[in-house]
Every structure is written in structure tokens, then in C-alpha cells.
Image: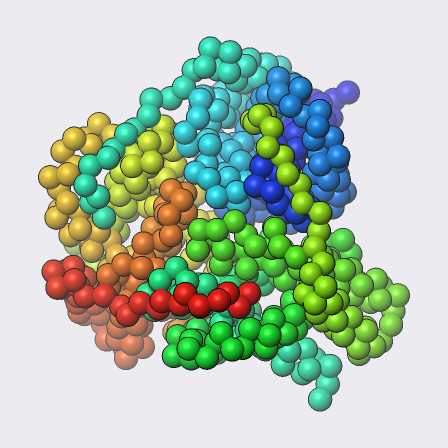
Length: 210
Length: 210
Length: 210
């Protein structure tokens, strides 16, 4: 298995995991099956879509490879059927989601570098890929995006994408960069969950200025 | 009247109807006239805009034909003036909205096929055109998109766009495809309203997994 | 100082002001530092980004000039440090925000005209640049966009962008157009604040038609 095959496989794991979290979020809002599919798809491919629209990189991946969209929609629907067992799988999902977050961050940064963008934009592209699916899911479900408030999640994406860009610019072999970044990002996220690490919060309740 | 003229006329009916539903939604939230125009425009052209941004198809229709944007903004404002009679027109609006939904679905699918996209993407393009205006309207008005929860609406769009793509791929004459798809979609939507057909709902209130 | 340098300097003032209002809005929702940076950035560059995505004009400004993005993110974070003094600066911020609104409206219209779009689309581009950052900020913070409801804000943007387009089409020298539009828009906004001018509101609480 080449490193491209590995990262593609991990990407698919991440995408389908996000579809499941999106479908469950739709279920919490008592949506119908169309809502389930829409929120599942938006959560799974929203990050990559926003990244490519911002970079002007067409065609979008799911437009070119519609088989992924079919798999994501099917996974969203299957989530409804398997909902009763989902609550026993919380730890599994947190683990799969950590894989997704790490791989999305790496893929986003990789794509921007390949397209010739500035290294800092590559980090931004990684973070957008990692977190925007969840942001769109939360907007569709009418809640303030979790990623703006919860434990160390976006920061894992920033650090992972940053490390990927640095090591790539340092001319390390691609397989070595992946071998360092993927376990690092994944481990950091698991540690953040285990020890409940979080970012400082900004609490500003004065008179509005605007 | 050619079939392109017919579909353009029906498209305009649909777009102006959506502008009215957007303006009324703004009024329910007590927005000012700018909010009325913005929500009216976003409801009317949001679907086609999201579709073209996702497909990377520029220029957008309303950017190229600004006269439509002017008509939509004017219709939104006129809705305010005619608001007192709107509540007597509920059935009329549901009928006009059913025309819009059907035509949008067909037009979106048609455009994607013309641009050479995969047939499944053409169905997605039809559905995005049909439902995204309403999704943006609901996000602007801070409510969970109706189309994710209410009676058979998006499904009418899926079936209509799917039928259009199938019949077109089967090489039927364009006028015949329209003569079959438009009454079918329109009738299906009216039946869904009359008999209160709806999609199954997914109600997931367990412990959060994410 | 050329007029391009002047308008770039005023643009930077506006962008950094919007970053501060975004960061404070995030603080009102008790977001963490990532949320502060995201909402700050979206408020500052959201308008120009939506405009360029709608016009299909790539690369986006902050993608090409990543130094602005760094400055905006840094300003968002500094806002947290200086939050205790922010409430004494309300008037200063309203003034800086009025500069931003005026300059964004002019720059948006200017860009669309330069790209060869229709004059009406140039006005739309000016308004989108002026108000969409705040709309995205409010969506992220789960409130109905203020600009759809509050005092004369978007209308200042419409009038300023319209005046800019008219004077430019009338072939006035670019410096003269700016010398007329910028003080006019800025003054109009300050008057609107001082005298509490507002748009009529549309209050529609009948039975839903949709």
C-alpha cells in the first residue's frame, strides 16, 4: 500500500465518520430522512467544499467522484437504522473522528501546497478542511458551532497542518512526513479528550459596542 | 412558444414566488426593508447561486442578467405593500411554489447535464436548485431549515430531477421530457400537500456521541 | 500619498475594526480563542470573500496577501487582552466602523466595475462587501443578522456604492470620486447613528403561507 492509498483509506474513514455524526445531529433535531442525508453530507464534505471554493479549485472532489457522495448518503441513512447501538460506540466514534480530523488537516494542507499556495494558506486550508464540516452541521442544526467553544479540537488541526507544512518544506520524504504527522495529530487529539484539555475562553458580557 | 420560453416563464414565476415567501419570512421576524429585500433575494436566487458556485459555473445568472435581480428586489418590496391580502392567498402560493420547485429541479438538472456533469450530479444540482433558497432563508431567519423537517418537499425535487435525467439520457425529445416531468413533479407536490405525505423522521435523543 | 494608498489604509482600518467587533461578539457567546479568531476573521474578510466567490474572482485577496489574514487574526486575539477597556471605546468603534462600511462599499463597487460588470452589479458588490462580514458573524453567533433589523446601515452602503458608480460612470477623476463618496458615506452613517434614523420595519405575523 502506497502512502497515497493509506491516506485515501483514512480519508474515507474520516468522511464516513463525519456523515454519521451529522446524521445523529439531525436525529437530535428530529429531522426527516432528507434532513439526515443533507446534514450527513454537509458534515462529511463541507470542509473540503468550503476549502476548494475559497481556493477556487474546481471541480469539487465529490462532483468529480460522485461515488463518494453516494457512499456518504448511504452511510447517513444507515445511521438511522443502527441508531439504537450508536450510544454504545461513543469511544469508537471519538477515535474515528480523531483520525478524520488529523487526515483532513493533512489533506487540506497538502492540496494547497500542491496548488502552489503560500505555506500559511496551506495551514488555513488544512484547518478549514478539518473543522468546516462540523461548523455547517451546527449551523443547519441551529447551534453555535461546537468547534468555537469546545475542548482542543481546532488547535489539533492547526498544529497538525502546521507540522505537515513545516516538514514538507524541510524536504522530508512524503511517507516520512505522514508517518510523523498522522500519529502525532491523532495522539494529540486523544490526549486532549482524555485530559480534557481546552483553549482559554473569552467571556465578554459588557455593553455592546456595535 | 418554444419549450425554452415556457421553462423560462415558469422559472420566473417560481423565482418571484420564492421572493414573496422570503419577504414574508422576513416580516415574521420583523426585519426592516433591507432585510426584506435580502431575504427575498436569497430565497429566490440562493438555490441557483449555490448550485453554480458548487459547479464552478460562472458568471452567475443574476450577475449576467441583473434585470432579474431588480424584479426580485421589487417583488420583495411589493410584498410588504400587499401583505394584508397575503393570508387569503395561501393556496395560490402553495400552488405557485409547487411550480417553482418543479421547474427549479428540472432547470438545475438540465444545466448540469449541459455542462457535461455526471447524471447523479445532475440530480444533486436539481435538488440544490430546488431547496437551497429556502435553506438560506431559514438560516437568515434563525430557524432549522423547514425542508429538513416538513412534508414531502425535497423528495419531490429528487424524483423530478431524477426523472428528468433518466428521460433525457433515454434520448426523448426535450419537449417530451418537459411535458412529462413538469406535470408529474407539480402533481406529486400537490398530492403531497393534499394528503399530508411526509418522510419518516429520525428522532435520536440519546447521549451525544460527539 | 496616492488615492490608492489612502483607500488601502482606510480599508485596513475597516478590516481591523471589523475583526475587533467579531472578536467581541465571540466573547459575548463565551467562545474559546479559536472561536474568537474564526469569528474575527469571518467578520473582517467575509464581505470581500462572499463578493469574490459570487463574482468568480480568484484568488481571494487574503489568499494572495496572507499578511492581512495574520494581522486580522492577531487583532482578534489582542481584542481579548484589551477587552476591559473596550467598553470605554464604543464611540470610537462606531466611528471606525463607519469608515469601514464606507470604504468597503466603495472598494466592492470599484472592483466590480474594474472587472467589467454591470453598474447595478457593482452596487450589489459594494453592499455585499459592506454588510456580509457582519451577517456571517451573526450567523456564527446564532442571531438574526443585525443589518436586517437595525438602524440605517445597509442603506448607507447602498447609497455610497451607488454614488461611487454614478460618479465613476460620469467620468469624474478617481480622486474626486473618492473625495466626494468617502466623506459623504461616512457622514451619512454618523448622522444615522446620531439621529437614530432607521428603515421602516415589516411586521407580518399572520398565518404562515409556506
